[in-house]
Each structure stands twice: as C-alpha cells, then as structure tokens.
Image (tube, rainbow, N blue to C red; front, side, top):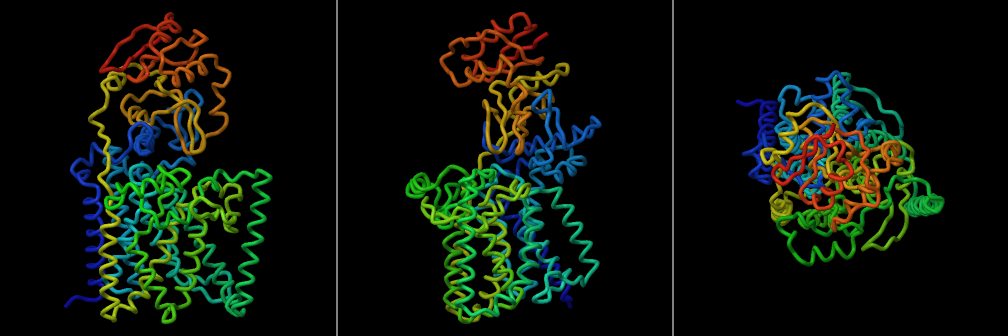
Length: 568
C-alpha cells in the first residue's frame, strides 16, 4: 500500500513531466534540434545575447578572466556585464555541457517544468484539489507573459524559483499578526531559502529583487493588516484614498522636476492590456481587430513588454470567484497573499491609464524613483508576482466551490479553454548550422579586433548606430573582439569612447544612407584588424572602405555575399 509521502512524490513527478511535455508541444519542433536551434528574432531580437552570455562565461574562465566583465564587446574599453541579464546559472552548467545552445534549451525546458511544479506543490500545500492544482501550475508556467517573452528574453522565462521561495518563506517562519519580524521555526528550511537565494542571484536579478520585495512586503502587511482591519470601513477607504491622492501629487512633482525614473513610467502598462490578446497567440493573434486595437491604443504595440493578457477563461474563473465573494473562506495567510498580489499588480501601472488616457499616478510608482532599485524598471513584468501570489487565493476558493456540479462544469470548461488560449503561434527558430561562411573563415585567422557593419552602441535605453544582435551568435564562432555591442546596462563612457573619433560619425551616416553616396570625410581611423560588411550594407560601404582604408587593406574577399577585409 502506497504511503501518503509516496503518493505526493508520484504526483509531483507526473506534474513535472506533464508541464515539460506541454513545453515541448508548444515549442515543437525545437525538441528535435535542441543542440543547434533556439527561439529568436533574427537581426534585432535579444535571444542571441543569452547564447553569447553562456559562451562568454566559459570563454572568460578559460582565459583566466572575470566572467562578469568582457573585453569581447565595446573593444578596446570593454564593459561590466554584472547588471546584464547574463543567466550565470546556464553559464555554469555549460562548463559541463560545452554547448551554449543545448544548455539554454535544457535550462528553459527545466524552468517551465519546475515553474509549473512549484505552483502545483504550493497549491497542494494550501489544500487545493488535484485538478485545480494542475491547472494552476499550468497557468503560472504558460500564461501569455511567459510565452510572449519566450523568443526574446530567456532570463524572464526562468521563473521556477519564485513559487518555491513563497512556499519556503511560509514554512521557515511563523508570522504572528501585528508583529513586523517573523519567528524562525525551521533552520533546515532556512538553509533551503539561502540556497534558493544564491540560485536566484545566479539566474536573474529581476526575479531576485521580486522575491526580496515579497519578503519585505509580507512582513509589512503582517504588521499592518491587524491595525487596518480594526478601522471602520469608511475610515479604511478614506485612508486608502488619501494615500493614493498624496502619492499622485508626489509623483507629479517628481515628473515635473525631471527626476530619473529609468524610463519606468514610459513603460507603464495600460489596464486594457489585461483584456487584449497578444499577437503571438495562436487563437487570437491573426485577428485584424486585435492588431488594430493594439496599434491604436498601446504606446509600443509590437513590444512584448506590454503583453499582460490573462485569458478570457481566467476572467470566467475570476468572475465566479467574485460572484461568491460573500461565501469566501480566506484565512489570514490567504488574505495577506491576496493583498500582496494586488500590490504587485498595481506596480505594473505606475502611470494608471486606460486606453492610453492617464487617470492618475499610482502611489506604488514611487518605487521607480528609488536609486539602484529603479534598475528594475519594466513595470509590466510584475504581473508574474501577481500570478504566483493570487493563484493560491483563487484556486483555494474554487476548490470550496468545486462541490457544486454547476460550478464544477464552469470551472472545467473555463480552465480547458485557457489551455487553448495560452497556446502560442509557432516560433521562429535560429539555427547555428546556418552560420555564414565568412565567420567560419574569420575563426581561422589570428586574433584581432573586428568591426562588423552595421555596428552600434546599445543598452536597454538608447542606441547609437545599429547593432545587429546576430553578431552575438557569430562571435561565439569567430571569437574576435568587436567594436560596439549591446548590453542591458551600459556606462556613458562606453557610449562616449569613440565620440571624438573622426571615422565613426561618417560611418553612422552611411548606415542610414542606402544611396551609396560618399561620406564627406574620406578617412578610416579605427583600431581594428578585420571588417565584415553584411550584404545589405555593401552598396554604402565598399567604395568608401576601398578608398579610405586603401593603405591599410592587406586582403579583401567576398564570401557568400559578405565582404571580409583584413587590415595591416
């Protein structure tokens, strides 16, 4: 006869396998080519930067260098990559696997499976029934925020540790209502939390900050909630209204004084984005109405950063939840998690707007003015924390309602519809086997700095020139330092290092001019050994380089449509 522990472990293994299979289904046929292909957007997507980061981690260590600094980009100055989304945990795994693409694909597969498992176990801890626990894990692992970012931001897919953090915080400490600091009840679980913290820092700094916020917020709510609960309903509403009014005018003043918010208010989500499907949805993405709506109302409609759609099936479950609000059986822990979930959702809207019209500045937007912390500056990403904290509240109540046949039918139909709603379109794959021959040829040549054309200096806020992100992947093959690059955070010194160079500005102008006209200044003065000109830029650059660098060119070859110059 199976013991209770054996049953729990068996269900956890089955849930883990189920979520892994869903990931393989949603990303098919990627699973057949894990070692050579990955999801991405050619030319300007971010996915190649993660492959580069994994490669660079091992490359730097093999050269006896600091893996959190690089001389391979922005040559010769280089740059710190400590604040870049470099996914060090994948770099560490690649020390063993020695295949950046395979490593990244395996990490993504495991992250989706463990994300679902983490919420599944969290819901079972709160006595949610088996069916709703499976559905809850699926929602967290695959809701549109996750699948929309999948071709671009691999670091944002590494959500597996968050539900485990929530679970072990609740298991490690006892929170006595009204007290600010919790009481340690398990040293064993505290060690688990420390381990999770280390893994989180090696995974993604965004989510490390999120779980840190959750810990502080939960302690604060535990201290404050009993005090607020003792107020009358009218006093509580007046206090809440007062906080929001004061917050609005404080932020309004900071905006007028031009205080730096790191662009957070520009990236503020629109409340309508919760209800509008994303264009990467298999079910809704090709509807002309969806595309037209996003184009009309959203500030940057093509950006995955504004994908916050929850699914209409989710709203059916939410409606059922609120229709039975008088029958809610939410204990103290659930209340605190529910309030924390709402606060994280409000963090998505520092500029509270509907259909592009700002209604007010949200008091929680003040966090985006806190130095250092405002480096976590993309508000819609907090939706992830709303989901992981609200799902236990929602699913716990739906479990109570499960015993009504009518409710059960509604829940099953809505949740199965969600599985269809969350299905993404087929992804675009990039293939390392389709590497242009020019970079394989370059790999055989002696060390020296490369100027890729086009080139540019770019971070998460601005770009000078035009950096082609495919160059990340190419560098893993040719292994030559390059002029320019792209990192999440870049110092002004990096942008300014060629500011006084007389060659750079004419070349920037040539990249914008497709007519092939000669630049005003016919000179070439950059510390490079190689130049690779991509096919679309040969018309602008060939005659200029032939003339301006004529005394430096030792060889010039055309390889599969690319121009390769080798300089003295």
